[in-house]
Length: 487
Image (tube, rainbow, N blue to C red; front, side):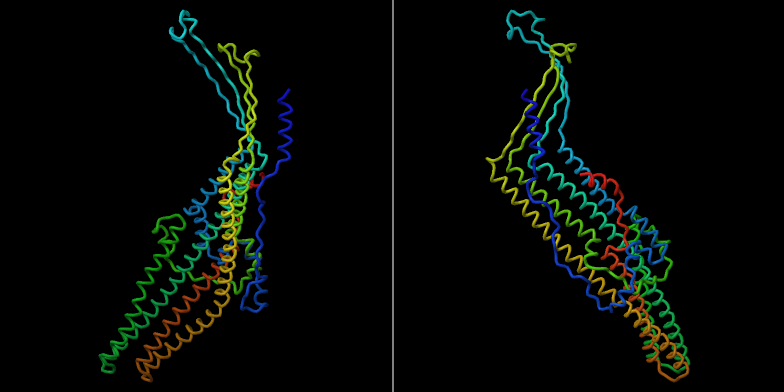
């Protein structure tokens, strides 16, 4: 008679319950409407950003070997495996937190046999001192979440799962960007090695000619020494570049989950650097912030910290727990589950830590401080994302201009070196002009190769800053959607 009204009243109170603490609201920040570029608007407008962003950026380079390396890296990179494990852990914790919203049910059974001693029961026959007891039952307990403590905890767990998912996406972008950069650096180093090797060969030919002229009495030992010194200095570049090539191959192999020497045979043959788009439109700063997974992760962590304020605040209010037990107890096992052996219990517990208000308010203050920390971290992440993109744009914006000038310098210096050797052969100029022209040719061609490398890696940096050209996927995306959208 009493139980039913009690349950009805509690159910009504639960339906009317509210979650204490602040609700998460996305912070508003003033961001510029466009990125400041030095390019004319017509050049930027000519770019095709939507097409680039909708495809995997590394495929735009048209290099099948790079495509295969990225695929292998996404499957085997150990840093990505670590991030995926963290995401799975957050998901598992969220599932455990969700169960706090529902009653905890347990079941148990006991069988005891007890014999009292003769001193405990004087004059009682031995058989009468034996007592048996059997009981079985199912119990349940449920915290009535009247003030939202459990709901805020689930909300925080859900935000942490979303943050872990975005962390994994951010790491995917970073790792793929690192693989692409290392691969393009390798191709640039191979081009610089080719330049050094060809120039060393040319200078060895000049040295051989000078030595022949000295033996014929036309040149001095001084001329021979100068030519020999320049040829040796150029040849000295080759071992250093060869070592850097090996380092790049080792880096790529480890990023793709292999031992450092695993890709030696596959990557040693030189391949020309790819062409890159003349312009890449970044869109608006708002578009970039919506794409960046690190910004999304920072917002989700702010959301989780805000929800935890509600968890701490709920301790200012009483915590109601509803418990129940239904079972059977009998003196012999055959009497279990008979109507006369039925047992039951319904209990309402109230726990209120109002006498410990100082500690409760200290926990609330700590939760407030955590939320302020995450707010500052979110705002800093936004600013760094904009800075990262603006810097990448600034570098890429003028990279092609540098390439054009250095290509012209490399072409003209090669022609000047060829003419200087012809004039030297004809006796129209001295050896110093030849050596100076050959030194200028080496410097110009090496500078052009380095500039081309910076241009293509600059494109990777820009794509990476935009998180553009990245298929926003997650190895267990369906698992995330199942638990996040259903809460």
